[in-house]
Image 1 (cartoon, rainbow, N blue to C red):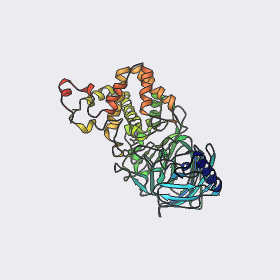
Image 2: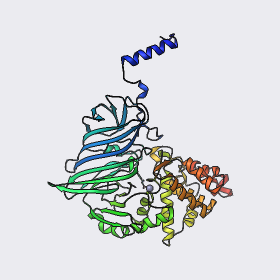
Image 3: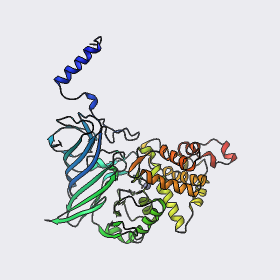
Image 4: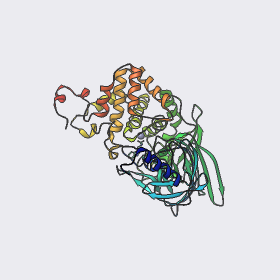
Length: 471
Ligand code: TRP
Ligand code: ZN
């Protein structure tokens, strides 16, 4: 065979194709979407357009069960494709109503349809599943996925926790719409993204159906459940609000939560109109969580947030949720922007100005290397994804840019960045290109120094410090 002519090879292939109608091995969708930090997250060959999750949860036994129905568009021929799912017993999976064969390997749920899927096909996958959802521990030691609380769970998925509660194409590049129905014992509330379609109680259980009709990255989905007091209203611009507060946090949370509508207005004035149909917050009592997350339309808080934390998470609706990174090393595009938003809010409330704050932080000695490293555009590995520099030096990068190109152009840049990219995904290179377009300046060296060079940026060093090697 090695010496066989081209004609022989083609004949052999044609014969094989006739003998075995299954497609060649290279039509297997890859097990990951190629993220540098989370190589197995997401999958090749599929584009999910809608998730419909029909679930029930019993806090006493920790049992989650139900069915996920995914509408998928094939971006390549597929003899097999994967979804991401952590744990659970999986029942009979169907593709377009026909039973498919399934195998598991770690977070990969490998699905072989009985009829191969062709590029461009739209198809439906149904996955019944049940079991105790997992808490995922990240490389930085933080908990995500299904984070148990005394009365339910705080449900968060950044960066890799969503497969702990539903089968997902867990890459931020594959946004989709979501319908989530969750049945819980009456007295508990299940809070999801978007708007509440229905809430019905029958025979001691209540079903909440939530619909997120705007594109959402899988990691931003939530169905946080437990005992909650719910308040609804509208923002000054007419966005409906839904705020759920664990009664144990109610008194400490109420003053800050009253500012939520004003914060949305502030951010609308700064960046452009609010991106989604609804807004709100979920204030849980979740000591095992230990941080907040910008779950789309309703950020989740582990306890009563302070004012800048609420503002931080709301600002992520613009930068993080509407304008989303395409790969995790670009996390400063979320956290630097949210931190800078905090600075501007504080300034507008009559507190310290962003310029003052920048100046103070810029005085941090180069020798204090943990303040300056890793550089925000290059966290190095997943363990450093949420390091302080991603937030602080990320925000400093924006404030330095503001001082370099001027306030008017900087404002224009952020508004254009949002307007041109909302509902999509972006890269740092896209931001640099837009900054150069808007300002008409060559900013390559500026961004290289601020985002990618370790140590204190040389433009901040005085003469003597500049000659001292940075440790
Ligand atoms: N995105 C969260 C924020 O709003 C941060 C976050 C997610 C986080 N996971 C984390 C922070 C783990 C620390 C550890 O800032
Ligand atoms: Zn953040």
